[in-house]
Length: 255
Image (cartoon, rainbow, N blue to C red; front, side, top):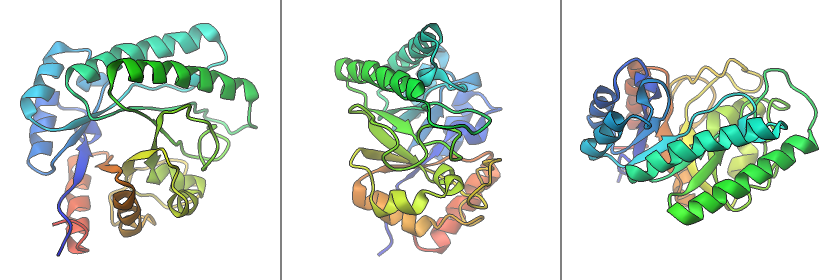
């Protein structure tokens, strides 16, 4: 018997459409959505909050992100990033989000591990954990692409300070750490971003559809389902969503 269609779709594939139209298309293809809360889909918009509630879809929320953000060694910049997340997180709670996702640090050029950045990230995670405890919506931290470009690219890189972990399998593929993550999943693993690429060193992070590139969706889904982690397709356009769902069906990975 085939597993049920349990894979959500990110609104990233419909970023040039208003959120109501994006959610309508997702509802026709998937049982849940992930709202990228920036640009035309920001949940700071009451109109978008109403659209999310009206859709009837369970929704996770991807918070806004920049380069350093939560790991900025400038305390003023770090607190500014935290304040932005507070606003988007409150909006996510308003729509009953299943979880709220944040990026740690990221830099365009690789560099050595910086204890100051690690300390800034841990302080930010502590604050986010306090927000989670007050509000109840789980918060997960996503691994980033490219060794040296972030302080979270491999298992054990960071102490998440009680927050959950979101495995972006494409990012892990680029970093050469996907097998390690799947072989010994972190106990905090709660969520998956599913897409593909050409593998280690594919720094363009193309977010190819499932069935293209080197990521084996069957292995990923088996591990995610065993861990009870939710799964979302994070792709660039509607055609890639359709191709990914067709590929998953053709392999018997969803109905």
